[in-house]
Length: 309
View 1 (tube, rainbow, N blue to C red):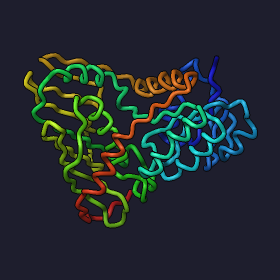
View 2: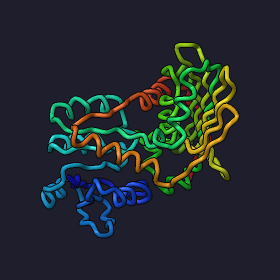
View 3: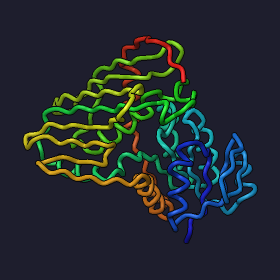
């Protein structure tokens, strides 16, 4: 049976990724969109909020939430209380207490709930995880360097409280890292660079380790110009592994594989959601956002020059 779907929030990520992937997946029928800005979605009725969506389109049984994280909790609770299956764009919320509240409600309502991390669905992530499973890891270095002006042009919410700043892409790094490493990592210290006119960091360095004492160094920066770098390098007893291109390229054991589909990660997310909905299951990993919350708790804050678009 086709899943009658609504989408809440139709900004850049929804238009770049969600809408094309939904249109290409026969498991879903997008029947309505909710947009506070009133920006229309071609071929789909657009309403201002989820209340109007459900009044006008009671056939909707599942929703994808693509709003900024500061607004997520109220919207998701509303959707779950209506008995809707919910898929969340990352991050799953703007605080750990909000995030922790949602799986229990979904279970009580017997509906599917999916906290998505699209980077985990990059084509080289699963092979990297398999290659590392029986290796001794001696060191890990993560570099996630991108240009906020390119990926979030003029979106002030990313630098407001709860917007996460550079941890918005940083959660992609954490989701890939926690997926491929055989032991869970944790934060030991952090340094966070806050522009003088912003309330969230634009750069961060994190020191991490795991139960085996492996040193893990993470560099996140939203001021990158030129080549965008999304890389995890792992030293092992069998030689190095490098997962690059955000998970599209893997070099390990002297071999290199590369595959890139601009919508591949999100196609994987929707295939997974199509499995969760009929089974009414919950897939809600909190490890990536917990690590970022720990970085905020343990981080030393430094004020740097103001940032403007």
